[in-house]
Image 1 (cartoon, rainbow, N blue to C red):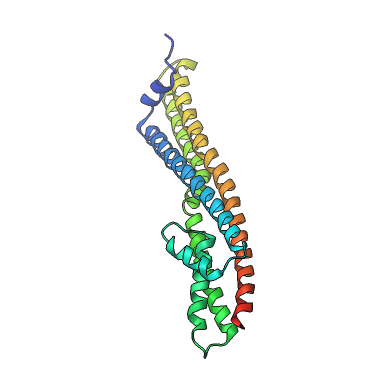
Image 2: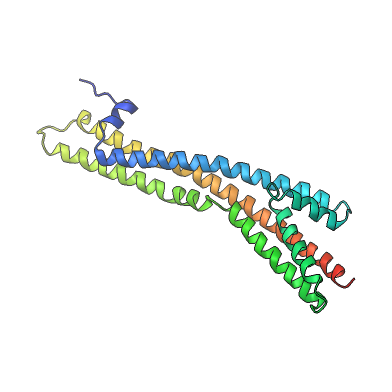
Length: 224
């Protein structure tokens, strides 16, 4: 009699522990794909926002007008606009005090921008650690299910007088499904983590360049 080696049958007939491993891997894959799409949208928006703001910033307009425009869009502004808003706001506040040295005013604005940039980077890096975790441990979780399934298959051989391939094939097949699920969960997570980490690093460099350039502009304005 030929064994039914269809995917659904193998999963349904798997041992409870192997089924639990498969369920965890499926859940991890669903969550990681959700986060992959979410990070893609967030990072794409951050890049476009940085491009739009840089065009406005370097257009030669008044920085005060730009600050008020960003302030009106505080609910929608992000990334570079928030860094600019934090720096200019602190610069304007400190400059009102005549007892503060010009360089102290610039340094205060620079610290505010660093805080704002740190918050922006935390927001961009959200969920990346989860993708890294899924990518690193999913193959081992799947391998655990594989080892357990193969152990059950060989234990079943001890209760029969004559071992045949049809007796061990279902157990080995269900075990290998756990390995395949581990790889299917891990590969997209690893690819997405590497891609998004590179995107976040490039945005971080872009923000740092803007921070330095804006600091130079504030240094000139501080002595006016």
